[in-house]
Image (cartoon, chains in turn orange, cyan):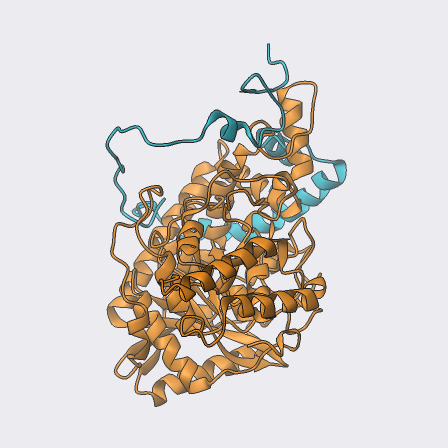
Amino acid sequence: MIRRREVSALEVFRAVRDRIEEVERKVNSYITLTLEAAEEAARAADDRLAAGEDPGVAAGIPLAVKDVLCTKGIRTTCGSRILENYVPVYDATVVSRLKRAGMTMMGKANMDEFAMGSSTENSAFGPTRNPWDLGRVPGGSSGGSAAAVAAGEAIWALGSDTGGSIRQPASFCGLVGLKPTYGLVSRYGLVAFASSLDQVGPITRNVRDCALLLALIAGHDPRDSTSLNVEPSDYLAALDGGVRGMRIGVPRELVQEGLTPGVRKAMERSLEIFQELGAEVEETTLPHLDYALSAYYIIAPAEASSNLARYDGVRYGLRVEGKDMLEMYGKTRAKGFGAEVKRRIMLGTYALSAGYYEAYYGQAQKIRTLIVEDFRRAFQRYDVLVSPTSPTPAFALGEKVEDPLAMYLSDVCTIPVNLAGIPAISMPCGLEDGLPVGLQIMGRVLEETTLLRVASALEVAIGFRERPKAGRGVG
Amino acid sequence: MIDEKDVEYVAWLARLELSEEEKERFTRQLGQVLEHAEKIKSLPTADVEPTSHVVPLKNVMREDEVMPGLSQEEALSNAPRREGGYFLVPRII
């Protein structure tokens, strides 16, 4: 609409800014707002349009950027006290790509500290609330990104996903969230959590926007040595393919105990829809997925304990003085990190320490191999695999904060995907007691097109149009 | 199972000062998570190769050309303490 000049970028900016002024106090989607720069970007897009120039695909689209992505000259906290005053001197590659495409960045979205969490309650800047029910969590760790889009405080958002951090909040907030294939999107400028698992991806209201945003951020980056040297596909063209003749597998390991009745019902309804649309649906088994959660909670903390060693109070971030270096390190990290980050650093350090390395870390890496092989075998038979995104809809604030294991179980369906490096998308597929339920669709490496095609077919068939209370009136 | 001595040792390795209350709480919580992780030990994996990374990667090289980098001022701009173009730390020796 902006490109057709039916509405100006400035008008869109103002509508979303007004929305932020109305609901941000209640929802707390953002850690830092950048409204002045956003207004300027919107004006610039309008100027280019008026001059007959191409303003870029994302011109005038208000975006929330998860505060784990470096933004030049704008503080990037990662939801942590230790980076409270950190101002990057460079942009993450995905940020500079979106700037070139004309985006209007409204601000930096709230998140669980260092992306560790499933509720955004681990943020040092206070929890984000779910726009569907302010007493509930928006999911996490990209909870600010998802809440911003759900509440109408942004049109698109960027998140990051290490074990479900894009898909689970998208599911809790009734949105589309995609974790791309490992290596498809550059991680240059993404603050590292677990480097063999982290990926950046889109959170949007519909599949078409998801495809558009993915197309803008995907592609090789010489600055990220883990970035795949492949041409991104035509994601938009993939949307209309339909599912007729497709084979869809449902891994029974991901639909076990712990599913709420509403989640089970919404998933079964989606499976019926796929069959009505001409796909073949059957139950299958990926036996090693039962071990994925345990393996993940060794591998991810192990990588995190190593990545987070850099926060030492010397080059950037918080410093608490001590009588010597060791005391300075210990006090800086004690004050700068929150409880969950400390837990994961300790867990990872323990799993990597002499005497335990083989039993925990070595064994977890072997299980990872078995999981990769399970998926490879399944994808010989099936085009996609589906499961619920999370076993439950959004839970109440405070419900799981003091029970790390219960919190971790919220990611039981999403974690295997990161371990295998494959892409997956979460789609809204129904409501349970007025709260959105998400369906996860998993695909082969670099087959984002297939995921988008299946997701689009479901979107059309279900016609999920519900909007949260706090998000009403903007569209 | 992990006890408070282990927690103290691991915290020292990780350069984290813990309060008494944290030691008690983390001992309990890490115990729960590790108990769950025990599950992975039951799987026979003698013949399985470990996966550290899912993408087959070789060393990624580029030509050894001078590229623009950070200026000294930029590199130091986030330093908690600095002096004369250096990061300042407590006396080491």
